[in-house]
Length: 339
Ligand code: G3H
Ligand code: 13P
Ligand code: ZN
Image (cartoon, rainbow, N blue to C red; front, side, top):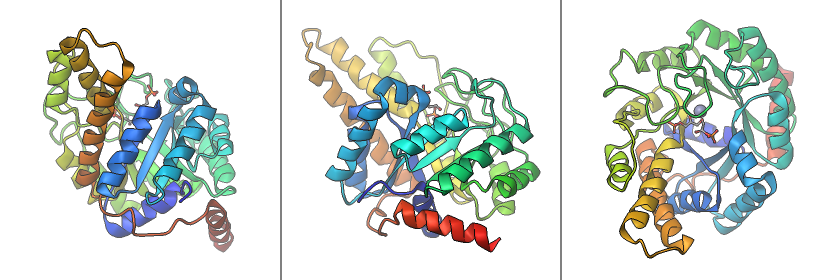
């Protein structure tokens, strides 16, 4: 089937009471790892590319790699999503290329660092919703800022999402999905120890879901940073500090309270790097990239297949037929006319 609307994937997940992992990619091996994991577990999936990924891969390479993915895995519903679009033009170019979903991250200004005002956020998000929905594409907005600046996204301080503002934001913008800040950050160093409710505020997710039951909630910074992956990187010459991520059981709690999209990048990076380091450390004579990229791809597949089972999306690939973007466009127009 062709690339599908992320809105459809999330609506189906909501009906089925499960979450869908959104996994970041930068190259062919990562796309292959995700698609193989989706086939292995029979999962619908969201593949996402950041601005950095688009520039690293090149839009045209990325687009054709994704075309290969949908052709080779016709039984898997796949949405292609722009992660952390920094300004409307970045979202427009992704939609023009064929992305079926975009994130307009108006919680920060276009530099991706400076916290933006609520009014700015509403204005840019509305602009992107108008453009996207007129083409059947999905929009994720963000309210509140995540902690951490290690990957270049974020302000460094957590600004938790205010539930009242969340209601107003969704009403004013019409976004399909909302990323909320509840204590996570991007990267490997999210918490100084196993997180408790003081730092990882799952009750905030419950409250926002209570007020916005129809809005699909998104968890960014959702890598779990498994100790065994950190240990493998360090065993073979890495120097990662002790690190704590978001425990899978907390993500599962979020899924029971309206979280439908779960962003994971760091765990894939750890899996890939650990596997490559192992080959480099143990087989000094090897220099064929396939000798280390194959185990790297397999390690990422294993990680992602596990997450697909954890999030509950496993087994749901065959539940539905794709709705075309054109049909989605008509649906958005009809919903807008009914208001
Ligand atoms: O949230 C950020 C993702 O992990 C993508 O990171 O901008 O380094 O590609 P990136
Ligand atoms: P992690 O760094 O926890 O994998 O989060 C990724 C993310 O939120 C991408 O938008
Ligand atoms: Zn993110």
